[in-house]
Image (cartoon, rainbow, N blue to C red; front, side):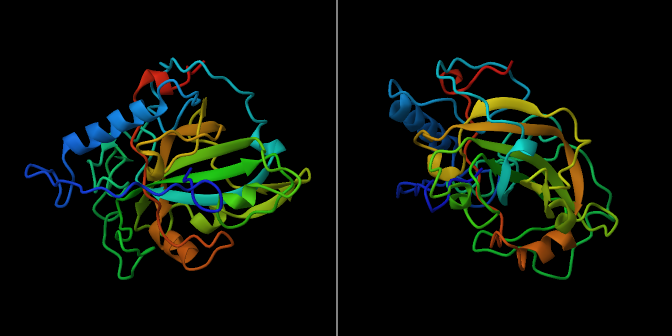
Length: 285
């Protein structure tokens, strides 16, 4: 869940990144840069009372963070307030265990990707730009992690995580339903426009077509995400539900969604480094 303006985004500190001569991908920063970011995260959170952080490996239950908070209600009893996606999965585990690499050190070209195989037909290039940005667009075979963000505030779905707040409730409980997809050039694959369709159910704003057959969601206590928190702790408390299986998604439908949606989302967000320090993780029960 990217921490964006209005109230959650913190810019990454300006820093000169040293490129590794042995980087696996062109422009990828060295392991030492990522290690330094992890060291800074530890030093900037130690003894300061930060709660458990995200993202994490959902296959590991280990966590030693002592701070607990009440779990948010089920998403069916909350209001959907925002939908956005990250280029590559922020979480690891399940069917998304392949490390994409260190990337640029600022959250792009890093994260985790689908660990399964696709056919040559599914990987056929498309003759269009898909969610283009200065960090590059999307192509068949790419992985995205979609965050369906829910709030206990009385709100309507809208742009940025500021849509999760209301004048009457500036400190709502938050829950993110996370689903990882792999993009394929197949008109018969899932349609992102349908997966993001909004409706009212039992008086709550809902994403009515969140996949329900992608394995039992791993639920844990964590935080907001995004590369702005690579070197400092997120102070926001989030209840997470992360599905372990990857669904195939029609890339053309994603392109169409990026061209116009109520959330004003146009491209994939960067990813936060996977949080590995047990002192910054909750125990998964």
